[in-house]
Length: 269
Image (cartoon, rainbow, N blue to C red; front, side, top):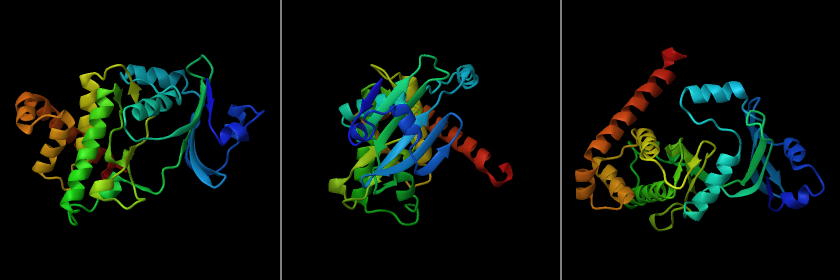
């Protein structure tokens, strides 16, 4: 499968796109044997390039043994970005995608997306909120927007599997204001796309999001605002109908935090 928009359709005319993408040079963000991520500039515009060269059977078996769906190439990101766009969730805009090879362990694929700069991740934008709270209207608007994106995503059959604040990009042009916020959801390479998102995977996303927001100074009322927007129901009904589920999500978020602290504590190296 091959999809090329401009400028890559013209740039690679008459060339093997898979050889051409491997020859691209730019700022490298990740360099592994099976995957490469870099940023390139073409005709004055920035693009992110992700190249997958096949995970290998060892990696596939390891993921299956741990009951984790393996990432077999760039198709996850391509499909998820297209579906999110259809659902009205701002995300990556793919301009090129290629995949070849039937053997999943050796499949060669790539995706190229437009650079979304200037942006800042919500993780960085919210980092100082405990000591320097944002204007209340801006905080409420961000909570509603994140909840709306999560509801649309899950309602449309997509679960992210890395649903953290760092993967929401807040656009800085124009400057963020309650009435003109734009958020884009990125890093979709592990996302799953179905007709309907199973509750198990919805809950994993929600627990991950809550875990990533534990230290940004959210109040109990902030959490309630998110729940009202996500479930699109009065808070009274949410708390009555989802009490057990919410307690489970809070417990999972705390477990994720404990695991994170153990992994990144100074004594862990």
